[in-house]
Length: 202
Image (tube, rainbow, N blue to C red; front, side, top):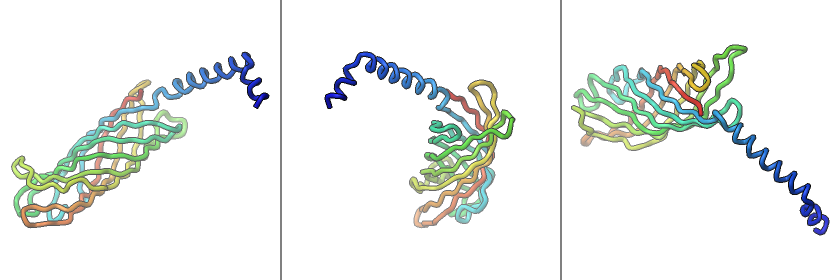
């Protein structure tokens, strides 16, 4: 203990330790630059199966996500999305619209393609979403939130130092129970989404 106390009491050692702490703090601040990113992604959606007995038309929607890069090519992301599908017939025999909204989260991998400035994009994660059924713009059923999953692939095209374009194809799957009046049905909302996101790093 006396040796340790003498070591710490040395002003030169104290100065070196203080300088090391300052340099580590500065390097962390510098390293943290451009680790954050925000993306807005509109898309067109194509159902891969019926929702109950409803044939879904081509849908559309958008998503906003915030990401944080914690190692060189890997980030975590979280966001909120809204998607809408129309149908000619549905669970009750009348024309209904279906809206899927909720939260997304997962991992994002971005890696350069050879010597090109274009990067490969891959995402995989989950979602906590619900499905609302609308008739004449009035909500007649709500599935409540439940867990689903999604995978995505695309490319990242730089548009300058901070901005990027992210065209991608995404597959989503969500299973929920819907009850309209006295009819309760288990439904699967599975669809492909083709979209182009625009993001900014900071």
